[in-house]
View 1: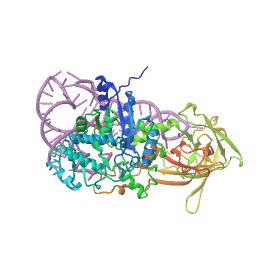
View 2: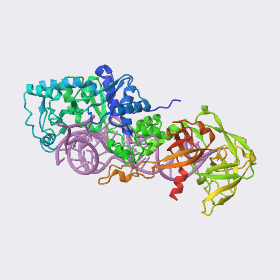
View 3: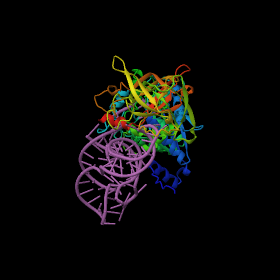
View 4: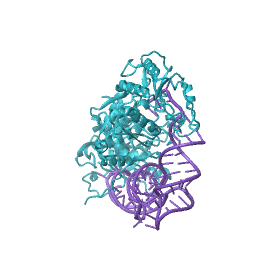
Length: 560
RNA sequence: AGAACUGUAGUGUAAUGGUGAGCACAUUAGUCUUUGACACUAAUAGUCUAAGUUCAAAUCUUAGCAGUUCUACCA
């Protein structure tokens, strides 16, 4: 029996399939991912990467990685490296096609001269303020620059002098001669070259003029013969310019297609705002596990496969969206459920003494590593007279009939161990419960239970004598509002979640975890998914909580 | 204000003039369970508004309304 799965095509796939059907560019598909190396990649880039790399792969095409490095002020090689690392981690490969817009500076310079020669570009001495004023506003026509009608020869000469460093920063720019009355502001004689006497991360001081985005991006697409240039909606207004350059430069006709950016609730993607979080010390770094950066999510324990699945599930369209974070969490859990071994770990310990278990005796329990994976095998867990359970798994009195954790007079199963009968408990002066006394049913051992006793609740536990200690970092969403940057007159930092990080200095883990290494992931039974943090060393284990397990009991309790 | 784009359950996304408007997450109620997890079953809930074209409209047209984007020598 084969399941008939309808395959839905998004609008870009339809365009591509039509182009293939029409044998456009010989039915070749070539996309590109063009980050500016001025920051870390985040969840938004994740979608863009998935679209450009994923679509090309689907149709047997290729994807270039191209660094859009046309602004020396903000760009650094360190970012280049982190971007490459993140894309690889996500599971995509540009093979040997790693390009830089800065490699095209000579060609771009020639393109500009060609435009000047055709009488389509001019050198303008106006200041930035004057140009801004000339542009006017969308509802009112603009004014032409007084330098607009310089001769071609003069323009050629001045542009060369700009390149030769004759003029200071800001003294002159090169503009395209288009239409100062266009309702599209990008068509009102846009600036395409500016003077910046700064050191570029790759070309050093070789250049002092740099092309603007509009005169670098599309041209780079053409140089690389990109067939489908996929970008987000905010570049839609640039498309007429993009096409105008192709036509007037007579270069390869790449096609720009825009899709809606992906927004995720409780996450922000503004580089400036993300930087502010780092600078104000509200997170430890760009790689803080709470950050929506790829490096943050990696450290948090989100599997790359889950991120890809998330992109697939959120689709590709043109409407603005805010995706609920529950969907992200759902795919992460789904992925981790299949891949992680289950272990016993107690985060908030309460000592249980099994009074009828002989002192000094210990035995080995056998536990399945992962019931979702037949090949995961089993492991041994030591058991003894004193164990730790979770404080929240004990109550002095059961609150209602549906409660089936530990309480005096009740039976409860220790997972992979015995059934316990709770007899008594002790409190200190402050009224805190310090220890619980139980008896165990010797014939109820997991796997060979002949007791016939039923226990509704099953608890995770750790043998007190064998437990190892670890630091556990508990993360929650960074903001208390789903769209912290969308409130007018309110600073997004006002929504910062002060409880987004809680550190448990001393949690107790089963001894098998002693050999866990940086990046290893586990399900701590009944509490969530955890990953070994790189802050761990030989003396100290540190875990990050990736996510909790779904908790329908807790949710119900909270409601009542 | 001008232009462009976009409006489908709570959220995200399908339906390419003819389906009972589908799927996922979320929510609710159950079943199962040595993880109150997983798995499974079911329920709730939707075409922005109005007119028009058509045998037939979520889909085409017009108008309205709402949201987004653009007014950088950033990308």
